[in-house]
Length: 109
Image (cartoon, rainbow, N blue to C red; front, side, top):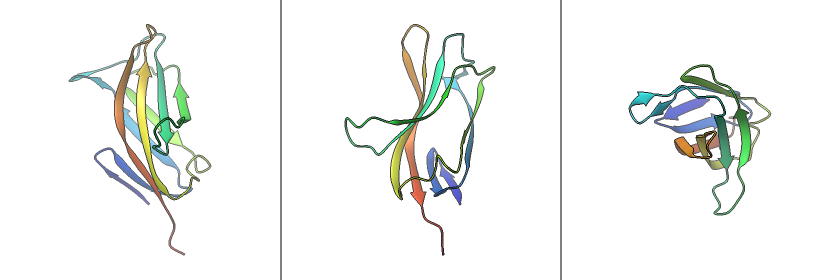
C-alpha cells in the first residue's frame, strides 16, 4: 500500500517506493548543475541520530528527479521516520527541497 498526502508517505513494509519529483528553487524549476549532489535521507527522528542515507545521485540531467527505494530498503521497522531530499551544491551550500515523514506499516495477514 502506498499513500501520499502532501509529502507525507505511508508505505507497506517491503514494498518498492518510486517517487518522481520536479525540483524547484522558489517558484522556478531547478536543473541541477555540475557538482550538485542530491541526497534522500531517512532517520528515526531522534535529535543527533545519524540519518540513513538511502539514495545519493551525482547527476540529474533535468529538473525531474526519480528515486526508487527497493523492497530491501523499505524493509524497516514499523514506525514513522523523518525524511528529506536535499541538494548540496558545489560551493557547499545546501537546499532542502522536501522534509516530511514516511510511515512504514504492516501487511494484513
